[in-house]
Each structure stands twice: as C-alpha cells, then as structure tokens.
Amino acid sequence: MSCSLNSLELAGMQEAEAGFLPDTCTIYEPPARATATRTSRGDIDDAFPTNWTKTEGVACRVNLPQRRPLIQSGAGQVQVISEGSIDFPSSTVISKLARIKITASTYNPLFVGQFFDATDAPQESTPIIRRVQVKQA
Image (cartoon, rainbow, N blue to C red; front, top):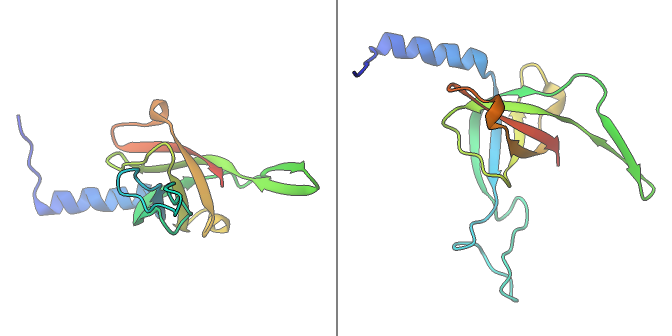
C-alpha cells in the first residue's frame, strides 16, 4: 500500500517538524581513511575542523540543561563540561566520531558556537527523531 501526500499536507508536516526542531547545527565528520589528506609521514591529517567534512544547517533540537554544568579540575585547570542530548530528523547520518556545533538555538542560546562530541543513542530515538547524547568537546 502506498501513501501519497498533496503539497498542502506535505507543507503542513514540514511546518510541524520545524516546530519540533527549532534549532540548527553543523555536523562534522572525521576524514575518511581512503580519501583523507596525509601528512609527510603518511599519517591521516585529522586536524579539526580543517580536514573534517561538515554538513551545515541541519535542523535539530538542543536538549542541554539550563542548570549548572559539571566542573572538573585537574593539572591546575578548571574545565566546565556540559552534557545532554540533541535531536535530529531520523534520516540524519551521524557517525560514532562526529562532532556537532550548535549554530542557532531558540531555547539554549548560551550554547551557540560550542562544539560537542556525539554518541548515538538508538534506544532513545523514535521513527521520527534521532537522538544523540553529547558532551562538550
């Protein structure tokens, strides 16, 4: 059985999705071994973000706590770490080594411009939403 939508129904679904995913992110994927730039020693040049592939303007929903972030100290330095999740359309491809940059956020503007390491969370995803756990890079 096939299902077809007319243009008005399709526009309505896209508008609804925009409400669920009001933010935008850039997804950075590490260089692929086969096509990566190599150093003079033959190692993969994985300089971030220069040699990473990026996908800009991806619709998302940033779910980071507005409460106090974790604070780690060591070696004479204090580091603030934020953890949470980011939701994407279910068709979004995100590898295990991806990094995500929040480029615009309606409800979490303090995190705009920051990078996060991503970990796929299939158990928390749905047929509509793909959820990834993130930790500030």
